[in-house]
Image (cartoon, rainbow, N blue to C red; front, side, top):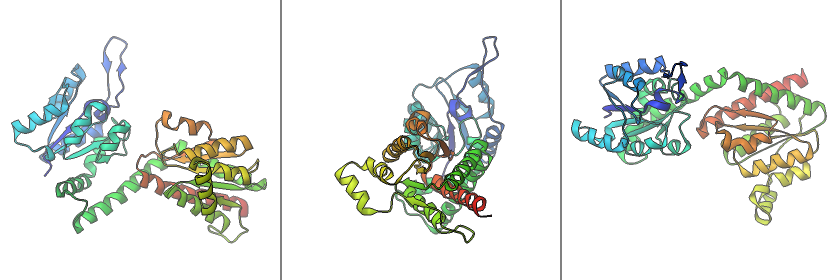
Length: 363
């Protein structure tokens, strides 16, 4: 069973930023929801501790909220091993929450490894659970609010296999639905994202009013989403009406395999766009990572032909997505790094866009 929950401070309990009062004192902020969650965890019998490389007046002040604080800790893994030995706790009975490179070894050895949404990519890749919330913005409250999911992760790892009993399956089903609902709430409250969705619908309406066409492309599950949305436009969404010209550039297997084999896989969409696209058309590229090379090349081709572009993606760093964003006229970025959850939101937003377009053109 899980006995202890260990937390990094900077980037987990705080947002990792340093503020100043102008008098030489550095200030940071703590989220009240996180502090309430820590109180609840301790009240439920868990040992809660902070393990941090810093040792400042601010971090010293955090001692009053937790059972212990290992400050100025240069080797977090060594501390955890020593702590487990001294307190007769097994490593697998610890949940560790971290966000940076100095947390990686501790994350690898913990029973359950957790990181906030804005953790570095290397940490996200090894974490058992990537939260929806960012560091300092309620991530600990989110984690403990879904304790049953954390327990399910622990149970699964202890079994040493991917198999789960029926109780574990039910927990997983419920947790995935909660994750979806939580992300949908984040999407709903993101005013910038809502404006982007509206702008995509407006641009598609203009394209159709001007006699243009909509092209869509993506890879894997995003290819299926591209085909799905093209079908909604060519067929019908809610009402009987004339067909709207839309094509997913993912459907002709002969063209795709010829281009991939004879040229390069990154050309499979751009070459088709060159053949079929015209100024006044619109290309929608769907990529959860924001880095797909064939979509990037298609966007470059679109710019040459005067075709506007829409990028549907997830959360990614500015450096990762910069090449794609520079070639995008509009970006619909779902605030998540979890591919299945992003794809679920993509099709939801795509459906809403189809509804808006249909209603504007045919009522």
